[in-house]
Length: 298
Image (cartoon, rainbow, N blue to C red; front, side, top):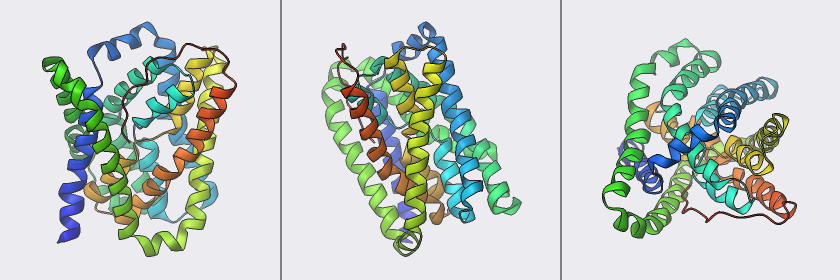
């Protein structure tokens, strides 16, 4: 009963607050700005929503992980970029405005793409019986309620009560970060025996996926001649995921706790690769104008 309350109520509410805190930092201009940088957006979308799931799928086929963990990693790969990607972009001297805009757009696109990837993954790795319990339409509605609606409410509060929103946003960020830590700890504690048994396999895979996508996102952007700050941003946006959403989808939507373990492992280890990438890029960036750092949450 206690587990049902945590996965069925507390996890979705925690995710909703995290996305609300993201909405407090967004304005319609963050979406409109994409129109001025369509090439960067298209490359980012291709890297995040096409390349990342394909690379993850190929790595899973090569690694031969158990079905539950394979689905868990595919859920993670289908999630939008994590909001901490904006902070990492600032540290790396990337394009913070692009990071904010892409995070906002990715959160909307995910409502439609994540259920499709999850159902495919369930059918491929766990068998068709698992996929039947996760209809696409129903999952889209659930993702909209947990992702899109809180962001929209946060933006509305920002527009109607701007002074209060700007004052409350730093506190909301700290609360959201604490919630993320608690969610990861809860997932680890609940599945400690399973995690301990498979950590030696899951951790290297998570790090390899993270480093591969940091490199691929940056390389793809440079290949199409985007600026270095934009390439840095897209490298980070391609590799830093909203691990909280992955945990909620696995535990609360699919009711499969084992599928949440990859999200918990990646949600911690992605900061190792992300910070190394950010500080490495910062060191070799040279003199650059740095935008004001946005408030962040996990």
